Image (cartoon, rainbow, N blue to C red):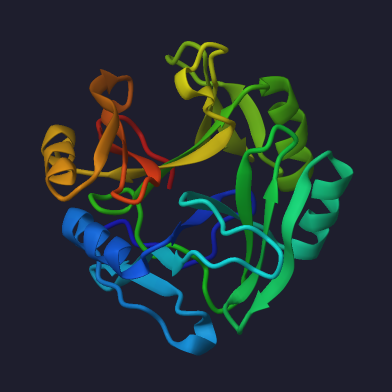
Length: 263
């Protein structure tokens, strides 16, 4: 079992969470689909749910709530990247053309976080760990296995992410028009450029991939409990994958991986 017991190296995706209009419905859906266990958290934690698999944290789910005069956040999965110093990362974001959407805040004794967008608008989170390092299990069915930046401007990404998070962009061997996100030479995620004729005008975004044993069976199960298919199962270099959405519209990918995974 690929458990994680030490802090992730800075620049490495370490956590994902979902903002959902109906938090309990999301907990029920992902519990049915991936076998997660989770319940609505206490008020002092804003009701935040930490979902577990085999007793280890795998993802968070929270209720979508408007903050002050801000609109209700969209129903999406957010990728969080580890930082050794959230305040320094916040400054680097501003100095590198990004936008800080939620400034650095303490999350009890668990860590410090912020939410930002890169210069093209792709939203991501930053996590400075203290008592909580992030996902405690990865790269196995039901757990996070990959994080992918879908962007309209590779050059902008290649300038922004190294300056802000120490993530380099390099061609991925054996994958034409696909790029590796690396930290100190180790692959931690992927990048692809959105085509100009992408249907629906999909904006730049980070996409979370969850590992499954059988992609086709998972997609069939997902549709049976109210999810939808955005890109049907297909074979690619790393395995068989599909892009789907939960019943409340949050997109994510599932993959039965056959290739090497980040650790």
